Length: 212
Image 1 (cartoon, rainbow, N blue to C red):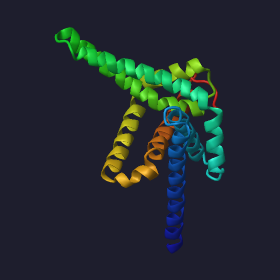
Image 2 (image 1 turned 60 degrees about the horizontal axis):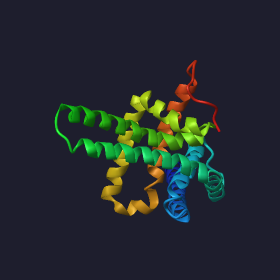
Image 3 (image 1 turned 90 degrees about the vertical axis):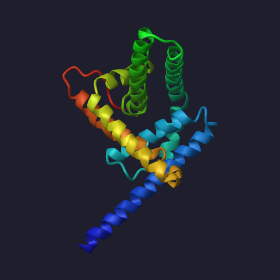
């Protein structure tokens, strides 16, 4: 019994240390890219590491793997991220314009834009998990996360619940920001996404390509 308890605490300590290390790598590489150019490749590299964890690859040298992925995918992920950011800005601006007018048309337009914004938001979450899992063209990296979002209602709910719980935890314990701000959400989104990707790949006519 005591051996099992000791093993549990040892394993828990390793996981806490891994998550802290990865979160620090994420924050430091965001700064390394000057924030503006660092946030997207740093986030993609973090998803790449959590994907390896979920596939059982826990003993790889984290810093070397992370930094190599960050460097090799720096410009491509920035391109994808900034295209998504432009789309999001466009949706927000349209929503702002619609709120300045009255009438049934404005109401219907607002509802449509809110739905599109939700689809966009979940697509943005899937973008990183899709990017690190599949070997695709730039165009497919842009389009497929939207398609997956539309086909994955249950997974969208799971992601929303998980991120809400993480946000609630961090809000009430701000000290976690330096240790889990990025890694906890990325781990959860990657876990849900991996299960969904496997389901889609097992379908006769899969919409996704080969894995990396």
